[in-house]
Amino acid sequence: MPLVARLQRMNIGPHFRAYTLRGAGFAAPFDPFLGVDHAWDSAATFPPHPHAGFSAVSYVFLDSETGIDNRDSLGKRSLIQPGGLHWTAAGRGVVHEEVPAETGKTVHMLQIFVNLPLARQGDAPFALSLAAHDVPVAHRPGVKIRVPLGGFGDTRSPLTPPTDVTLLEICLDDGAGLTVPLEAGRVAFFMPIHGVVTLDGERLDSSELDVPVFAAQDAERVIRVEARQGPAKLVLFGGTPLYQPVFWNGPMALASAEALEAATQAFQRGEFGRV
Image (cartoon, rainbow, N blue to C red):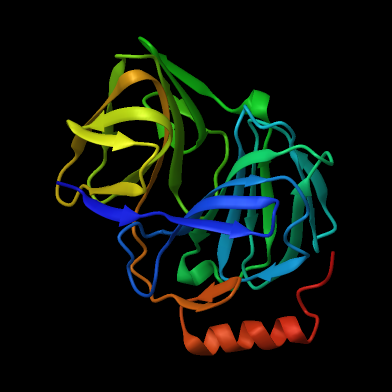
């Protein structure tokens, strides 16, 4: 049986709502992920803010009414269209802002926080982008798998991020199924987006808040996914645990209290730049 993490409902003002998953401290069960927000955002909710020590990743679902206007202190501005992904590796510190690209329309998205290996937490920040039409797609009978990060079978994302993770958006017709291999040493968790599926025979319903977390310790394992009661969509997150301490301070997370304090002071001195 997998471990079960628990989503929390989060509302910020009248225009932002999310189901959020957060880790805490050393080696959370879904390490190297620090957290995920499955969110709907219809207005500028978060002013320009800093990050340090990890990566902030935005993935916009194809059914989103609009994209995201992304700006950062690297001097870059980009539009993340529905179906696209943007990866900001904060490293030693960056400031960014993301807002819906069109007033009055709602962004349907994932905001994903991925830890950086200790040796890269002091690197200069940088960003990677993947347009919707460049996201590779794998097909199985009754199943479509978008692969914005990592790989599925012979289908691989063109991105090489600083932390090796997999992100699969899996859409299944009613009654369709597939097997998902999980390499030895890696973890994976599934977030339901809509519909009902079973994972190795256990029910996963998008109306509930449980998130099953699987681990393959000494040998590869295979997880069977099947849609029940109509079409369904879920997202798989996978990666190799970093087994690092995590010290949080709001939007910054580093591997030691000393590094976190140094990053906080650097931001206060203006060393992260500005948008």
